[in-house]
Length: 82
Ligand SMILES: [Zn+2]
Image: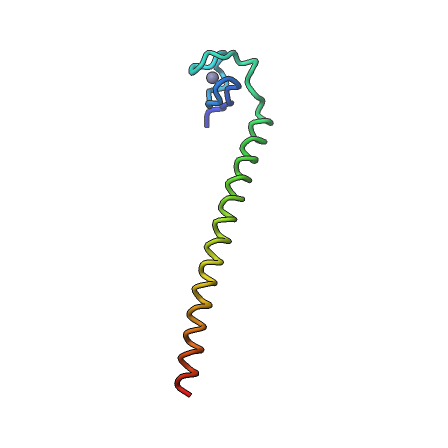
């Protein structure tokens, strides 16, 4: 893997050897360090995980509602056949 860092000017990933960003011309001094980059990635991951967690919970509650309906109709059905 090519060592890369993120340009502080445009946020794009560029090769670490580059002195200037090929996208926006920002000098490397303004670029964030590997540590900050990792932190940014972790933050983004956390955000994605949080979003998918909310999605999962919503899906689960949908499924639960569906199951409840099925259960209700089953109960109704069994009561009718008593
Ligand atoms: Zn740039």
